[in-house]
Length: 306
Picture: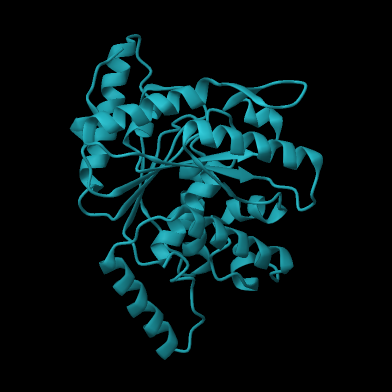
């Protein structure tokens, strides 16, 4: 393994990392909603996609850029990087190459942006671990099921109590330990329960009890995320989020109650994350909101993170 000190990637921007070793948990969807919310709040946002194979985060942003140009509508876009995967015969050479590209991206944005949002792959890689050790805020989207909970902990089959920590939880523990050794800071780890059922069920309660029990052992916060809604999947081809001004021109159809409810739960999630905002960004958002008011334009969601 290539030994590289994370001190070499010292940063000033707040780093938000989306991580989970199980695919399909909503990492890329959550990542873009966080990035767009911060942009609307006046923050200078950069994004990095470490999933060089799937590139879902990159495709989401590319779709957003393309739709903004085609529909001639203003959609906020972050400064984006996708780190290419090295495919040589030497593992050490591959990791060195990927580290160099990742380090170059961080160096280009760390002092010129307020927040960096990093989406990681759903498998254990060198850069995935490195990103976790850099995180100021680690967001772990988790589908609300025992199948997905298995990535965090093992359970007793009789009473569903937590009996141990799984591979991903152990990796996060080590990454947080590395972070403390470097600068004495503690990563704020937030587990986000996605695809929540709108109905109370035994499964929902048992999964919630397990997460709460593990949270005490591992020191993370648990918050509710996105319910199972078709609108989130419909957003992807146009790169939209629930926080955008959604109308017939933007969506291609009239918004419905599901769009309104999606926005409300996204706002609730973003407030629960408690991400810091730069004062300059707050002033930029306030000035933009005032301009929209003067121009009699519909206001955007500038203050959702205030």
